[in-house]
Image (cartoon, rainbow, N blue to C red; front, side, top):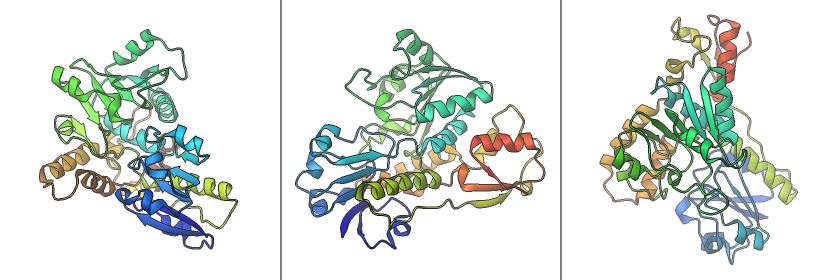
Length: 365
């Protein structure tokens, strides 16, 4: 029997493991995943709240780790490699969800020029969509293009900046505090890592419009960092059921291959059918324009921010702030565009194609 520990906030675990005769699953809160609870386990499914290093793993039987995250700065690759422990992440699984968040964020600016900091899974997807809607984009990504200071400055001068970069303090292109100054008329959207942006310096020196989903030292962040942002959300940009399903399926496939066992259940998409004709305004979707009003029906980051800041004011300190933050994140899980199956007789084929491009599924009559 293979013992596996999993973060209890990973959804659908029961559906995956309920028929397995090989794996014995134990779910724990993130702050109870430690060397003691992992000692006799061979596999771990974790999230970014769990630091994967020698302090956690040394002295255990862990041979396989899958972190259901896109970032990797919580992983000590050198240590895991030295112990020949398999490690993989769900990089790219949340790209569609972050795109949805960013599209809603763009509704707060009339500008149509965006500086993209990072052009990986998310940045490249965003660039494609923005190009379709006639936005001008300027990309800075030294891992994909020539590391040009001029290119970086050009991206950071754009009226809108979308931060989709990986985080690092070391290496060839460290991104720690990559952005520390903005002009008052600029708007910045950060869905990558809090440490890429020096929020305190920016808020001290300018009243630029900050739309922030990620924070320094999560989940033990400083609540004071959040209050002065235009929009502050609790790390929920990638927090859709669709992205979590994709991430867990990647983990399942990796476990099957690593342990050479095939008795785990892959998850199938669960779509909610929605008849648009019951509520769609006549001119809500126009060809060539991002349908901001329509998108807001499915994700409203301003409302999420208002609720989050209200929750912060009510936080009484009886529980740890990290547990409070994780609970707020859990509360804000949402259905992604791809979780819906839309039906409509009012929209023509071009407008249906536009919604498909955004990630929605259209019911074929």
